[in-house]
Image 1: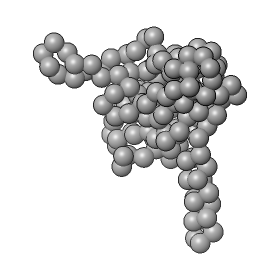
Image 2 (image 1 turned 45 degrees about the vertical axis):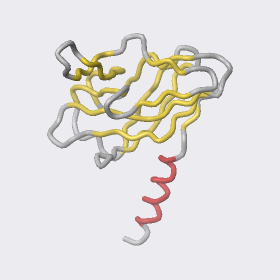
Image 3 (image 1 turned 90 degrees about the vertical axis):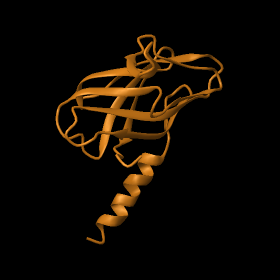
Length: 142
């Protein structure tokens, strides 16, 4: 059992390390939530654009669910909050960041195909930077 703990610590460190796209996009502080018994989940993270040009996260894909969409929360006319699909994606300004967080923008997983496990592989597609595959740890405590 003792040899398992260092391996688990190394895995946690690797997942905490930011992911980089070849032309300057960084994904950091990533985590996903999948509540037991639910057929849906969400991922949250910070996107940093280290380039001199604006970019946009236009889609996400994962084998963990039947459908993956970019979502945000908006207030309806009656005052309730609703999740809505953001078809145009999320802008990430040149030299800036875009935060995906609970209660705001996020990657939504719908129609889970089973237990997502300890990590979720997600391919993020950017308008200019292209595709970037990240391993996102599942953390239902956040």
